Amino acid sequence: MAARRALHFVFKVGNRFQTARFYRDVLGMKTESRSATRLECSGAISDYTRITEDSFSTPYDGKWSKTMVGFGPEDDHFVAELTYNYGIGDYKLGNDFMGITLASSQAVSNARKLEWPLTEVAEGVFETEAPGGYKFYLQNRSLPQSDPVLKVTLAVSDLHKSLNYWCDLLGMKIYEKDEEKQRALLGYADNQCKLELQGIKGAVEHAAAFGRIAFSCPQKELPDLEDLMKRENQKILTPLVSLDTPGKATVQVVILADPDGHEICFVGDEAFRELSKVDPEGSKLLDDAMAADKSDEWFAKHNKPKASG
Image (cartoon, rainbow, N blue to C red):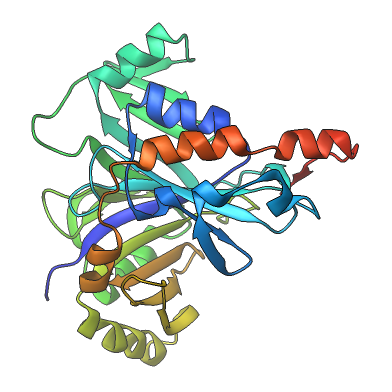
């Protein structure tokens, strides 16, 4: 099978200011890829720098933006996609997302310096929470010349059934497996962020905060992947589609769901690499966008609370 790679995980966030502080000031991630400088609202794409109060005054509801943050370019780093919906202040968490683990003594040091809550759950491993309650596990060590993001952990209700899906259908390799603890570590390559499946008792509940994990593969594989899912009677949330970005690459995407309903996005690698080139101004543009965001003031002025998702 041709190379596939892990790309990012999508989080819904309700407070851009606190969220940006956590990912950048605590974890030490940077805002640097294509979506860091783009705003997507109601299907239209415009530059972050064009955001004004008037743009969202009637009303903010239904408008959203996204920002990519990571320790390096998405070509060889796993990143977080932060989706901010202007009318929603917080989201109800399910039991589906169990955490992201990263190795960074600097992140541990940053958290202590900023007095960000840390709980040592194992020797040298600290649990902390991003705004919204998303869990992160920080290993107090650093890996030279490597992506600090080690794994994403998702809950599954039937480990055997999930392994059949992720390995037999999606072609992942099993790196570790513990039947007693009902967990398995999967991946496409040794030097990539891994996917950890953790068996739980009962059903996996996604609630409103459910996210999505994304991978890339050679574009020519996407039709075959979609056909395989059809033959196996697996759920396809979004059939293979081409997404145009004005002035940039057209990317092909198919979105699937595993047996527990975890959303999985596969994109054509060649076009995605072109679309996800690093923008050195990304961090500044995000700061400018947040400074220009008057949504909190707008809701207060109109005596409207932000909704809970």
